Length: 190
Image: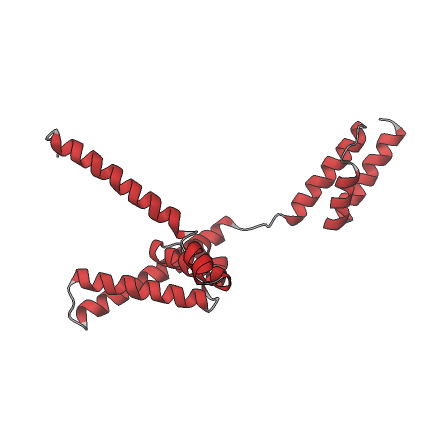
């Protein structure tokens, strides 16, 4: 190893261990068009050090437990609402399910409006993506984000920017399944 390469490597190791993100980015930019293999290696090391600094670390088991507990709590709340509607209000199961859906969507939209749902999503991750509450959050957050652009071009045009694909592929999937069912019924297989 030449003296110049050894010096560059030692300098690179020093920078990578003690450098701030800005210093690492400037080092990467400085070596952008480097032809020297040592300079290319230094750029790569600075880039890798920067990526390591800015990449968040997390504990997968902890995230899984949080998602399970929060998602379970949302499902428990739904079951409690259904049970209350059926037992205390005398509703049949179908009507109680409709009220449960309505209340969960309303609660999700209100929590999104109060900026509580995004904090809950940050904490629980996939646990709050229980379909009905996650969908309501997606619609409400789009409405809040684009309301400043006006009723038509903001709210009206953008409200389904997140929910639109869900609706589109939900309808398409149900159509495909309907066609498959029709074919199977015509062939006498169903």
